[in-house]
Image (tube, rainbow, N blue to C red; front, side, top):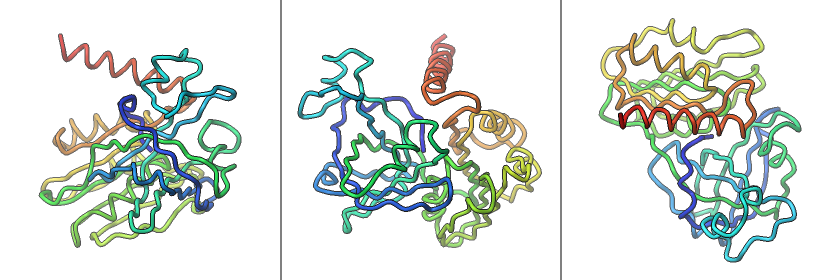
Length: 276
């Protein structure tokens, strides 16, 4: 998953159909989509590549062809489709498949319950992809830190780390039942942390003995631990800003809409400070 600035207005809406779904863990649902519309999907080189999934407002008829610029120009805001960003877990052009993983917490939220209801043939609307991160080969080792929301990006990134290169991943999930296999040719050490057991992601990273040489780091997930680790990695560990990909995907105690507004306000404040 990713929560990035909305650059979707100028991109075409891609129409796909669900091919199959799979419950990977009690709280992780995989959706594999494809169809003729996949020809409009242009992949990028990022392992945190993300698409924005569109959720049309109930009862609203949209102009065809479906285009976000037209919708935003002609319809009131309350009729715009809601959008959520999700990491592309896998794209297979030969098989004609695009794979997305959704965190599911019962009936709460928007995308999780929607993903749980999907059956083959259902329509999936999306725009993208965007993205900003991929493991580099010109560093000495990699650090990847996140929770369930960042798991698809971490897994895709570990698959892309160069053969034999050291990589350390810290992944916080609810318990052992939420762990999933991750394939990699890197010299990888994956440490699963369990929320139910009281494990703390920040403490685990703070206690970790860094290796020698230059590290590229990827830290994404709940905004609270992301903020703490940003400060720790930049000021206490001396990680280069250019080699640090860090972002909050969600915030504890805030629903999706609230968090999107808060993040947009924080970003605007940061940009204003840079301009001054």
